[in-house]
Amino acid sequence: MQFGIFTVGDVTTDPTTGRTPTERERIKAMVAIARHAEDVGLDVFATGEHHNPPFVPSSPTTMLGYIAAQTSRLLLTTSTTLITTNDPVKIAEDYAMLQHLADGRVDLMMGRGNTAPVYPWFGKDIRQGIPLAIENYALLRRLWEEDVVTWEGRFRTPLQQFTSTPRPLDGVAPFVWHGSIRSPQIAELAAYYGDGFFANHIFWPTEHFQSLIRLYRERYEHYGHGSADQAIVGLGGQIFIRKNSQDAVNEFRPYFDNAPVYGGGPSLEEFTEATPLTVGSPQEVVDRTLTFRDHFGDYQRQLFLIDHAGLPLRVVLEQLDELGEILPTLRAEFAKDRPAHVPDAPTHASLVESRRAAPGTAAAIGEPRQPVRDTVTGRAFDPAASS
Image (cartoon, rainbow, N blue to C red; front, side, top):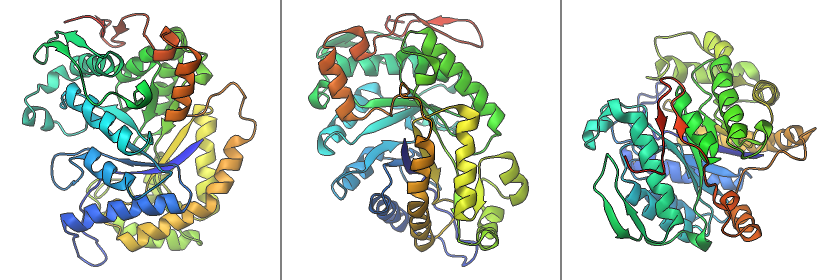
């Protein structure tokens, strides 16, 4: 079980002081947070990708490459990489380069993003979001898996005898998660390829994400990648910890009440009741997090959001210390009664070993077997075919 944190990189005014960090301060803070995440024993650091204020992480590979040089163990990833508005050729090259720089400590999460204007900013049509995701991802896989690619599709210029450089480290592409808040088509896409599925389990009720993960698990088994309980699942979560539960509530309340993503909606108490947000003592956070396995089955990755809503760097680092203290308990509890056939989250080392064990086989490279079918419209898409 991997535990880590993810950041959306928002620049938000601290409601308790009225101070807004500069973009430079926020960027440097994210780096400091990643370094401290490794110090306290976490496994994963993930950054979002945004191209609009008040967010700063517009270039995830630049930030992750910088962090890679200052860490030795932390797995670096995204939450998410925009598969719809980024050129698949650039994604292939950027993340292969990052793989080499970070000695394989890289995977990435694909997503369509949650900011509608980003599509025209990059010359795309949001109405084509799902077909873009399907076609772009199919091309990305070919660019990583084939040394020379000739390709033609609907949404970008054709490629003739193109080689993406550098080639993936050890001939093995980064493991891919597909992140989704609401789209069954993305769960279907993840299942089709045998990739991971990450449910950003933060703003919506548990029942909603149960439905998406159930679909993903069923389709993962349908496509022949393993049993449903062997599917690779990740979850998001939001926490704020203090030794005393009421201290946690009192300290976090002004941030909740004034944050753009929360303010004006349900109360803190209503929101924590309806969503996974947990504000309280270390034991309360442990107990609430352990319920996720009851809802979703055994899963492979748990990421927490802890640095948003204007929380100052000092407080975020304290939150990491608190999380580090409960980490051994979380690891031990999640390991209890975990079936032996349920796999760990893939790493570069495990993927290299798998490739060596089955060189050139469909199982080794995750070759899909059938077209992706839009579970809403019933329309079939064949990612391997030209459009």
